Length: 500
Image (cartoon, rainbow, N blue to C red; front, side, top):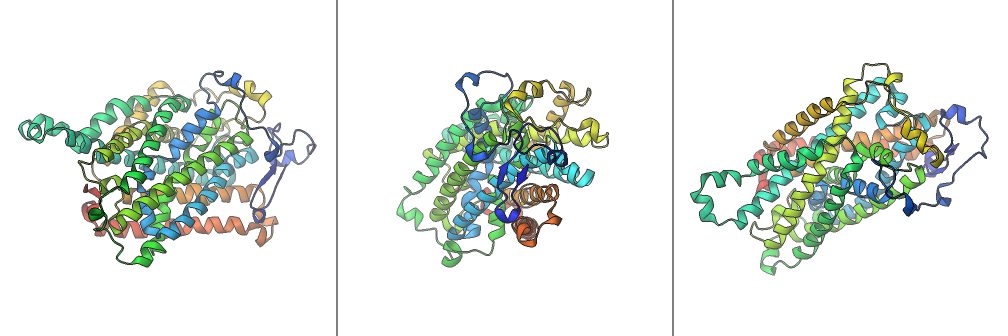
């Protein structure tokens, strides 16, 4: 088993797919035994397998789940991120972050194979013991909880405005009950309880593929509306928006790290990477590599389109939720608002699924790691039947009652938090700076370097890894500080909560 060093871009050249052993044991095996070079693999999935293996995902289903996980709440925050970076700098940032995130997503699975573990947190335990596992679990949980809160905030930013715009004002004024039902917080509670909550109770992420397809169709509609309709606004309207400092607006803005945090939030899906990988009917590294490349590339294009388009139109007035820049009675944007609100209702369960697993692991954190460790990742197509039959030790799988109560707690806590704030921009920045930096930039590389014995390598060979780690630390420190200070100065959410 050979892996290039960090100086060579950490490209995985070959990995023995038959092995279920540790890296040290693999070194003693025949190098010619079932080695697999990634670029020589056939990525296509046989149509005959599309409806086999109940509870598992085809490549198309997995693509929908991964893309939906990436293109969640963060997409409408991209104009705000572009404003914080400067348009030119944001384009470079989109590409750079996509390359790094694509790599670190795959590193999570590579690290699992190298350490003979099944999940990100188990790899962290193998590398750094219980403290490492706890850090990853908390980061994953915080990211998913923050995402869930952001989804509920968006529901409150979208659906109520649409309902109020199509309801005669005289009805609202003369009917106190109707006025109450159409209020932001009431809509959040009703939609979350009757749509997102039931979907969140599922015990298999593959079951969410249909809702993910629905969400992706809505997302395409939203992107087209924002990009096209924004440029159809009247010249009189557009002329009101300017850059006070053209250089900061078009080239570089000192608030760069806050922009990076929001972009990171949009692109990161490391918290459910192992779940998506494990949901594949044939979970091999080459298939997952193709899945990751495609999902990240499409997500980057979508984020850049929305980000640059929105910032070019509204400039310094760009809000954390770009839809809030448009009037409440704009019927075209109201279509986007409905689509995005419904998107959040169906994406919300993906995040709850992750937090639920995190809480289950934290509950079992003090048990013997050998008893709660997952089985090694499935390696070859011939082994899939055996892998499907493997089970965790009795008593470790989450029971229905346990899943029900944990899910109920998580749904209502995150929903409750969204009722207290409407500043989506600050929420995305804080989650991106704290969780994304640890989960997507720092820990995947640290685990990989430890598993491949970085001490035996030269500085040049480790330079790429060191760069990503330092980059993650800078985002964590600088962006968090800037976001907290700005949030304090903008009590009540500033202009971000206002529509139009």
